[in-house]
Length: 307
Image 1 (cartoon, rainbow, N blue to C red):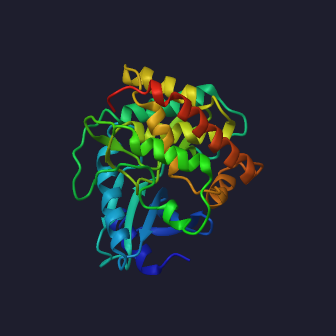
Image 2: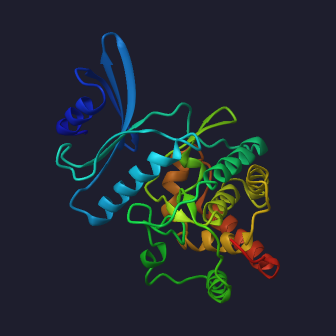
């Protein structure tokens, strides 16, 4: 249940004098929250994201998300930051109030090349924004930096394929280039759609400064997990068309994205199922991830210099 202190703060921050007409959890019965205010016969719906002020990592993520949102909406469809309590002094917890985006994040069972190209193009538009790493937007060198799935798998045997991929990645030259704004957790469950039209990108708590391949590799892996090998190609096409140049070091970023997944893939299944793909079995997802790794390993010799 949402805390009354949080609601009072959000109301005063974005809609003083309004009454709270509706509160709806957006993720499994908990935060983030969709909150609708009513004032003078008019309704306004916002999203409230929260975190624990006692957790240093949460404080950093919350500040980073606020910083990313302050920039991102000017370049891609993204929520606007309406209010922030980055200390938790007023709301009783770390809290961001952001605008609500139209559409749905539900992932269709049938792949749409139009949709896959559109999400790649959206990533390319985001990657036009050059940013330097700093306190609020730290350097991101891998996707989903807030989770260390390798550490979480301590004691779990790592398949030989993933061991080989990790060794190849260690020996490969690191990509170089200008850092840009990266989302850091770019998968279709964090995108909003109206039909096949891209309506926005949400959940910016892994954002930072990094190289474009970080997001592109994540999207290519995501498309493969959801639809099978080859589904990442329209994503790349959309990115390259919008960027006006070829994507570089694709095999490197593909391997990195795959190595930032849980070994058995089980931890990702609830999110995949919740976003509209309950028919996908963990064995299918794991097999597709491994096939993606094999393809990337075959292409590593063709990997080019650059980002």
